[in-house]
Image (cartoon, rainbow, N blue to C red; front, top):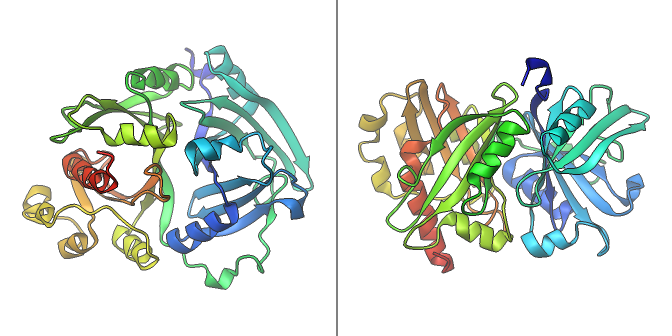
Length: 369
């Protein structure tokens, strides 16, 4: 593959969720996670089949969409999956070129290259299939100057009052994790390498990610000069059902398990989110015994980390701090990670055992372990 044939990926443009009630979900992400609601599409903007809300915080853009009628082509997703991620949109230099290269390399097309114009300019996109019924949309908005895309208007202040908006300090999407069926991880790693030109960053086997009862395997691929990172998980054989198997069972197939959101001050971010009633996984207090000796000196106060339940790991390049929310709906499917990197580019290998034991405790409470 020559350099000029590379798909010109820039970054993650936005993540689109398909949900049962977009207006209520927007309220949740605004008031719990600190997102600003910036745009709306629906009956008032002459969109007849669905409602959509665009949320932003830092460089993160979420789009929440709901059907307005039972005959919406994606309405059945809600029965199968519940609320979840439908599309991870990737910003590209050239939509048509990206689409053509992806199709030539074996991608399954969903929507061919399209151009939409309104008074704000020209918006270009095309969509391919990924794992499960998740999709990737190639997006170029270089010639578009509206709030998000055609069909969306800036949010009416009467719907969400700007004076009551309080960000939580989230800055960017660090990575997005996909869960796939047993035996299919390598297939999807090859898809990202061969179709989208990603490289493999790191691999974890069932010796790295295991507890007394369950295990999983994971490989991390990256593209867009390292700005797009997708870990892909599959279950491994264990004495009991792993979190990946639980996810696939309740989600109804492969899909996005969690989204890692980066902050430069995880202590302040987690304090703000806890004050907004966001629920986080907790590891036992023994995790923090001798943590200073295991990790070395860091800028953060160890007492703050223990109070909030924040995990720490170190590699050759620095350290990272992370914490995971509980699922954001009653199905044990989608959740979020809050992460702060101080030099480290790792994924918290040193925390795997404590983290997955915490997840298993939640599974035991649910009766799904």
